[in-house]
Image (tube, rainbow, N blue to C red; front, side, top):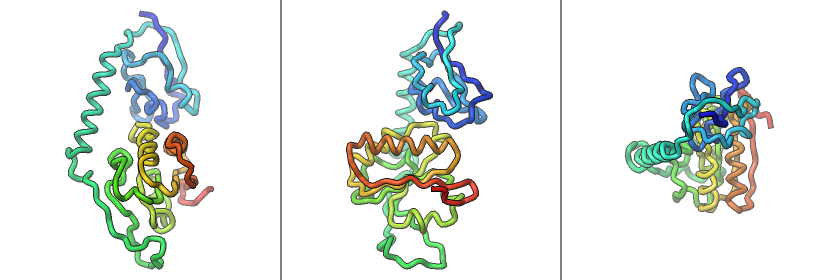
Length: 235
């Protein structure tokens, strides 16, 4: 049948993954660093992915394509949700919640010997529960995965005295907004610090955190810090 469907210009695609995160049907996936329309029958033609593309690589076209299969989309999403629930609820022993005693955090004297300031486990956004004792009264750090490797003093300068959760919207191919909203809304979060890399795909993490702050209905202090790929603080 002839119908409206998206077209992805691979030459313009920068591999940020924002369109894949915005596609609730799962029609788009990241393949070899580029966005691909992997299931034409999963594309409803509404174009939720279009406004998320920073390079204008996605457009509409009318052409021969399979009919949109809503039932298959629902079944696929249900299977993904069940798999995620399985991993979170006990499929992976490493996701068990743990809290560490690190002393008084901000009041500790600096040491020439490196000290970990990770205060809880898990720390991945996809694995951390939306409610946990360590969130109560916490200063929340939302950090891109790469920041800890690019910025040498990540533990001392940013993680110290905070609850740290990390993620990468490009690799996870997911929109963190809903989960971050629940964490901020349902816990007594005192402040939010977002630490991201300068690369475009990190914009997805920043937007998710900012949207979560808005959606939570709370007014709490927050800031964004950008790290350059050579390890400098840009702002």
